[in-house]
Structure formats: C-alpha cells, structure tokens
Length: 493
Image (cartoon, rainbow, N blue to C red; front, side):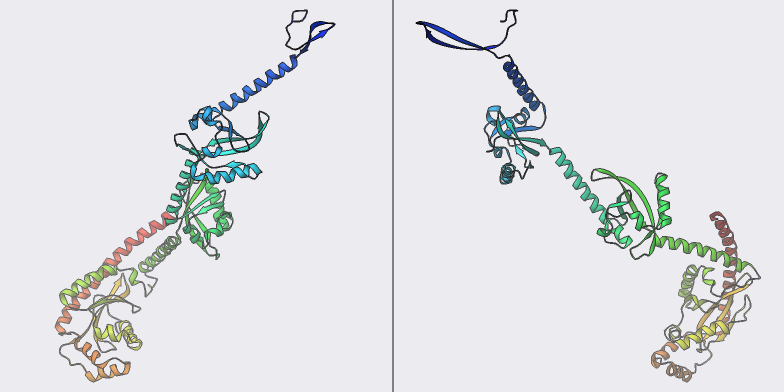
C-alpha cells in the first residue's frame, strides 16, 4: 500500500542470511502492476475466444500436426454428441465416415504439406449419424503451439438442394428432349441450353449454338425488331417470326416465352413451333380465295369466258361420286363427268377395255380425250347426243352449264347397242397396232354391256335432267359463294 493508501500488486522475494553474526531477511519487492494487467488481458482474450468459438454454429476443431484434437467448440460436442473429455485426444480420422478415411488421410497429408486446404468428407456422430460437411483448414497457433484449425460447415441442406436441382434439371431435360416443340433457355439472347428439336429446327447441332447470341444469327432483321418490340410490351401470348437455318434458308416459327429457374437463376425459356407448312397453307388459302373470287366473277359475268379447268372447283365431286356409285350399283350403268379440257372428274362403271387398255396407251388415250372434247361439242342445254368414239365405243353426252356458260359434260358409256355386231377384225387390228394382248383385249370387249336403243334413250333423258339440275344448283351455290367470298375479303382487308 502506498503512502496515499493505493493498493498495488507486488512480487516479493525474500532471502535469509547472517549479517554481523545476526540472521537477517533480505526482501526484494517488485511492482508488477503492468504484468498483472497483461495477464488479465490475456485471460479476457482467451475467454473472448472461447465465447466466440462456442457461439458459432460451425464446428471448430483445433488439432496438432499429428492430427490429434486439442480443442473443440460447443457445436462439435453438440452435433457429434461427445463430451469435452471424450473428444479431446481423438484423431481427426476417427470422426470422418469410415468408408472415406483413406480419402481423408490423403487430404490431411496435403494439409500438412500445404497443398490442400479443404476436406469434403462427411463426419460421423457418436451414435452413427452421418453429417455432410465442408471443412476449411488453416494453420495457426494455440497456447504457443503450432496447430491446425478446422471449421466444418453443415452442407446437408445445400447438398440436398443441389441434388434436387440436378434431378429437376434432368427431368426437365428429359421432357424437353422428348418434346415436339423447340425449347431454348437464354439470358439476354445468349443461348444457355436447348433441346435437340430446337437445334434441328435451325439445322444445327446443339453444341454449335450454345453460348452464342441467337438474336444475331438465327432471326431475320425484321424478326429481331418484332421480338424487341414484343418483349418491350411484356412478351405476352405468341409471336410469328422468320428464322434463318444454318444453310441460310428461312422458315416461319411461332414463339412464346416463359420464365424459368435455371441453375439457381431466373432465365427466359422460349417455346417454338415450325409453322412453315401452316403459313404456306394459309397463303395458299388466301390465293385460293382470291382465285375463287375471280372465277366467281368470271362465271357470273357474261362478258368474261370461264377457264376450261374450273369445273372441278365448282361442283361437289365427292358427293356426286358417292351418288353415282350408289346409282351404278342399282342399274349397272356407267357414267362420268369430264371438264372441257378432257379431265375426268367423276366416273363409275367404266369398262376394262377403256380403263385397262384405251386410257393406258398414249395414242388411244389421245383418242379418248379428243372424242370427249370434239365429238361432244355443239349439244344444247338439256339435250344429249350419242356418238361412236375414236376407239369404237359408244358414248352419250349431255352438257353441264353454269348460267349460260358451258363448263363440262356428263357422259354415259362405254357401251354397244344390242342390235349391232362388233367388227372383231377392227378390234384385233387395234390390239396389234398398239401392242395390246389380243386375247385379254377381246375378253374386255366381250364384257362391254349391250343396251337397247330404247333403254339408252330413256336413260339419257334422266341424265340430261340430272345434268340440268347440277347446273342450276351449282349456279345458285356460286351466287351464294360469291357473296360470302366478297364478305370475307372485305373483312380481311
């Protein structure tokens, strides 16, 4: 204690010795105030370190250069279920899962020589619970000793999330690869991934386009502008674009976009269908509607002639064919409708001598077409004419008119009258001239039906009326079609 009453810490050393025959004590008193302060600071620092270590969630190990644990924080004891007494002195290999201790030993050797700093091997608790960790190891000092300090972070949830993400991406990739549409994932145009269908659509291999800016080489300039404007407006619904294939050809695509979480980030996912065929069909339909409108004008305008090939687009050939098939089943009578160019639009019951011989040879086919076009001319509306064709078969024709325009003919034939005898030498000469098998050709001739002139007369009266009915119905339908076509054109324009 000083004179003024302050207490100070001191260190006293005493020695007994004899001085002038008397035993005396020599005391040396040293003021240790500064040293005491340093000791207190050291104790406080150590306590702070313990508090810090025990307050963090990560497991912290202090181990010597031989791998024996010198210190562990509370997280270690709590997670691994060891007491302080049990954990101190254990080797770090003992807390790693047994099946990977060889890997741990190799990593520990790397840590000693400075070539490794992390260890991904899981640790195992006292009760056998496996904990996925990632351990970071650094050199340091502890109690004036060179040691290693390992900090282990539990990555169980992170690993689980990564596995789930990988599985999710694998499921997505499996579905995308099986999709009929093209699928692309991009970030500001840079292609991150795509399915095989998308690459195939543009004529590339997947590896050729991943990592490139698809906007720059896969779209026409006009489509790039459309895409930019579409995205500026929120990229809602679908948009039609023109894509450029690897071979520089173009195709039409229908595109939509959504947002997807891909590898931990939000990216744009594009869906695309090749609609080239649909676009072609739509264009063909528009052209067809325009042609139809012009044809309707042609049909209904007396000052314009109708083209010879137009009958097929005026009458309902499928319905008439079905009706003729039923009628032939009942009567056995052959019938057909031919346009003014000689094209057969509807027919049933035509004879083998024509279908298997006359219409298969270029010269005799020419006779068929010329007969239908030339010998049938000049027949008035509602009338009919019988004539022998240039291949020596009988045919009967009655015209089909739309309004006042002659657009085609209805034919009844081929047949022979029952009161006449065929000239066999003429048909034998025909077979020889055109290289027909004579026997088969004559057998086909024998199968040609023979009809009485009275029956033919009555039959043709029916067909003439039927042709006139087709004419009237077609004319009425055309008027209606023209009104509808004009309305559609006005609406589209």
